[in-house]
Amino acid sequence: MPFFRVSFLEKLAPVTAIFSTRQGGQSEGPYKSLNLGFHVGDDYAKVLANRRLLAEVSGLPLEKWVAGEQVHGAKVAVVDSGQAGSGAEDPGTSLKGVDGLITADKGVVLAAFFADCVPVYLLDVKRQVIGLVHAGWRGTVKRIAARAVELMNEVFGSRGRDCWAVVGPSIGPCCYEVGPEVEESFKSFSWAGKVLKPGEGGRLHLDLWEATRLTLLDMGLLPERIAVASLCTACHSDIFFSHRGSGGHTGRLGALLGWRLDGE
Ligand SMILES: [Zn+2]
Image (cartoon, rainbow, N blue to C red; front, top):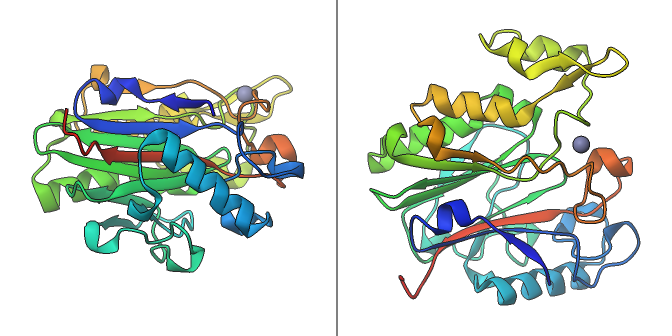
């Protein structure tokens, strides 16, 4: 089963950071084949089997995964091993109203699921804190990535300049045409003009990658410590699930981030 390794972070600390593809799983139809989302209409047993497969190949045990409900909000939760398994096998146990997770506990694996929205991986090497955020346009307007860094600071003393971040595969400015509601929501940002630009045909396109990068720079992260994958999920339907690219009926990709147990 192929998957992406976020080597930008794995080189810095004993963490495993991955992003799945749609290949190598058991689901069929629009979920073909490695669908990790329980709530999209796929067969539960197949999704569970897919999650177990990914857990096995990544070395991140499913019973340690913690997932938020993902409601396009800005709520970030501090989690520890007491919550291990939340949302892993039973979607009803995912953390309510949560779109972002942070932890300093080596006994949990942060998990989040995507079909175009932006995965943001965070790592404070100094204080050994990790974070994982699910950000669509609504979460980006609510500055959820910044909220995660703020919470890392409040709870663990992390400073922006000690943090590293990766903006994972998600819908790119090439494919993300947006309407007036989205345009209006971004107007208050000083950098709105840098992320909303007319595409071919004149309609506005939103650059969530750059919006996330600028949000993180505002939090004091250094430009050289932010990596953007620049892989568009809608452009590559053979590799990724895409909400936009599929007309809305599709599976979910997974981002996983956890400390390696061997500690090396
Ligand atoms: Zn694209």
